[in-house]
Image (cartoon, rainbow, N blue to C red):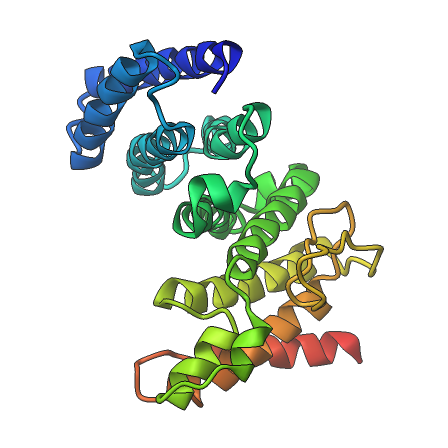
Length: 290
């Protein structure tokens, strides 16, 4: 990293330090805050070293993990407080911005690698999952507040769109159709991997997407299909980037939940995945279409 990038990182670390002090001053003693504090001090020391001896990728990965640790405490705090109506919107916005910053920093840095090459798949998946799951929890709570929802329909719709985008992005990182051509002793595992399903979190993300699409239809009306931003790394419609102004809630939700039900009642049968709500939502999509 060049001198300018190190200066930019130091400024970010100073901001994280102030945030950490505020959280701990308010009584936060969570293990993740402790871990974040240790990583923050290590980052400050690394920034003082000769830039020729510091691996930029390691530095950016440690920064990302520090961000994930500190914001995890705040996310849990918001959920425990049931997303206070007077402040949660701004707090969620701030957390989404902070969780987006590692990707921004990589793009701003003079590192001749792509995001996956610098941060690695697991950290990128975690950043997308945490943003998507936070918006899911926020929308899950505020959709029950009738007056708020009436006055903030556009904000609600934007949160749904953004949350779905982040979760689809998470599912896309390891989506590998070429795995269908690889020989595995366990064919079920091979099929899961070829679908980009590497953990329970990936399965849960599909259900979250379906639910958010349902809320979008139920509370905001049907969004008409528009021109989606297609990711050149994947030629599948399901995993394309839908972070655009227009999102077809019914189409995206139906495809995701059909896949979720097929997996849970097929390859994952007997592993305690519930499909009842997914089927109810699919019925709603069909009635809405007709």
